[in-house]
Amino acid sequence: MSDNFNLIIKNGSCYINGKLEQTDIAINNGKIEKIGKLSLNSSKVFDATDKIVLPGIIDTQVHFREPGSTDREDLESGSRAAVLGGVTSVFEMPNTNPPTSNLIEFNKKLDLAKNRMHCNYAFYFGATPENVDQLAKLKGLEGCCGVKLFAGSSTGKLLVDKEKDIEKVISNSDRIVSIHSEDEEILNLRKKFIKEGDVHSHPEWRNAECAMSSTRRVVKIAERYNKQIHVLHVTTKEEVDFLAMHKKNVTFEITPQHLTLYAPDCYDKLGSFAQMNPPIRKKEHYDRLWVAVKNSVVDVLGSDHAPHSKEDKNKKYPASPSGMPGVQTILPIMLDHINNEKLSLDQLVKLMCENPCKIFGIKRKGYLKEGYDADLTIIDMNKSVTIKNEMIASKCGWTPFDNYKVKGFPVATIVNGSIVMKDGKVVAESLGKPLEF
Image 1 (spheres, one colour):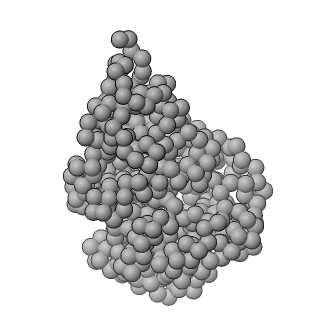
Image 2 (cartoon, one colour):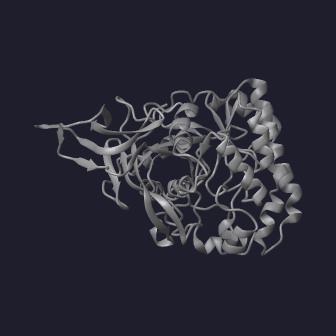
């Protein structure tokens, strides 16, 4: 029979309507055209026997450092790492140099991404105390996933720390506001807890109350104005308990780092390579984050991929910068947690495929459905891999999970109907497009 489709995925266990189904998927012109047992031909057939076919994995928090710090990462290298890790779409952050906080810089970033990124992409618009008038005009802006607000200082110059300015941003934005939630006033007051040369003091300085105080404040503002906010990289048991009771206006994210590492062990082993904002905390917080995952209180998993050079990370604390890479390892780490029965495949699909689409309004992604975009992640739950620094495609060339053995690994990444990664190699270049909302 003649070629009917651009690509057919045969014999896979496909995640459809909340369960795994042995079926085939036919792809044409970047869309899923047919789901069902197929005898029709294609010049391209991917045999997914003994593999699981998922909707494309979406990482809703990455820092690809372009423009400004392209020695650490750029849009090409970061997206290469993404597809090698089974990620088909990313939301990229605005704390670049210059910041992505006006339409000129936003459009420049879209131009930089065009025909260079291997996965699909959207960019955050950075909030400042001065650009509130622009935040009311972002509806329909191509490739814009929302507004990013830094309530506490982290990497870069974007900061909105005064309550009246936070209120202006949340009340005026016509897009969801995603928040780095730490209280700047408490951060400044607690600088006395920083011990030079001792990264163990990082979570003492940026303590649980610093996070909780800010989260309490932004939730109160969101409820007052009946606006949707999304709290990023939640790290404390106090925040998890509080947010569980305030779900009407608020969704929130946890990172795989905070579900895999805890203090003091991570600082003993990794030193400043475990340093990030908000910090990795003691096991009591780690345990409560896992309870929130198991009880489906958490909405999204994001990597907070934030690469820095080894040279910079080796500087004496606190001169060492905060952040670690993660876009290439988020899926393997979480698949290993599934194999260790810490969460289910169904929960992972909700956290990294379905919920990002529901919360942020991404069109035609997140599900294996006829007519939807053909973004797929194919995984082998029995494949064991020892993660190594040498595998990392990010320019930083390291991972906090060096020598970490995982069971469960992505074996193919399909973006817009084309196989872009197969068996650990990028096999098609620069096929990413802006996400539509």
